[in-house]
Image (tube, rainbow, N blue to C red; front, side):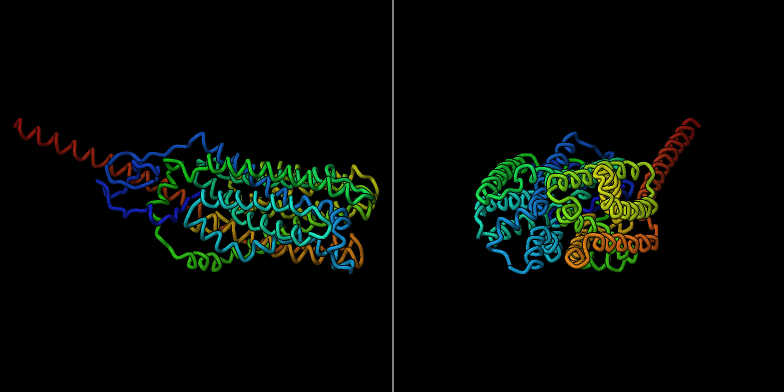
Length: 506
């Protein structure tokens, strides 16, 4: 049961006691449609709105477009290197690593900016962050249109940096959107859908560029193909920005669950640094931050280096590399949704996290040792298994963090998880690139497999401290106690009236 802790201080009036000493929440009648407490003795109202599906769908679309921009250049890394060779370093390792930074800049930008962006999310809310993310995403896409020249790799990197900053306002939103808009039995599924959009974007980023920009001996032909790809992306992302302006709302008129109403009653304006300190003092969350970062960082490294990994075993198969990436992501989408539904039904966060982590490691080992057998369909099969579990881990990690860190903000905890993922993504990508250049792809893949083994072991030490579930039980107990008190008071009042009536008759 997800708890939404609203940090908009200007919209939180003081709470007084109601008729029975219990605060009651009703909708404040103003143009802002804020959730607001008012002591009028009426029954508290909760409601889920159909608009929630429109909100999460729109978020999925612009999250998808940003994720597409993350990987759409690196899946054709050999073609990008060929086209921009005049503006790249002469040393092979430096040249290839420079192109890798088109992906890693997403990871690097996230680490220092996660704290101010999470502060903005907690203070200004969902709509402001959604607008910022969609605007920067479109701006970066249009800057890429001006990059189609062999001496403009620096401009391309700047445009990619703008897109990387945009993702700061996107990756931490799924758990927050689920908490604000969805009912208690939908939050894990809604979080999975939020992650789903990002993964579909990665899938399109793997599939489309090798088709639009095939390898060619003519640099002019490559430039024309890049121009078409950049213009199409810029137009689509501009449309999404306009839709966010029109459609995306901060929150519904009424909270979707009793739990979130209680959260509003208990919310206090708290210093952001204190919230961070509370999270860092939580040993279980510290371990989860590391293990989540390791798992997701491995996924980032594989995605960034998939082009050279596949081309070492299957030269000239740029499209196959993209299709294998697509297979990883599509299987991962199924894994994300399945994991979300499973968590909503079982609430077994620790066991699910550990099981998926172990299976991610097993999938990576299988992928590593099937590349060399030269049977492409087997590689696709193992890549699908790897993606199903490795990507399925993403929403599970978000929900496990929200569970063990309650009542801290979901946006803050998920932001720190993502920061850890970016950090490990950079380290593992650089390390794997060095391994590929020195000992080959096998050494790189074994490095990732060993890293996942360490992450699996560490996950086993995370305590199953289900604070959010305990809070839900307390809410039900409070509601039961309040009902018993109300019934008792009514019974006592009726008894007094009956006694008084009998006295009058006597």
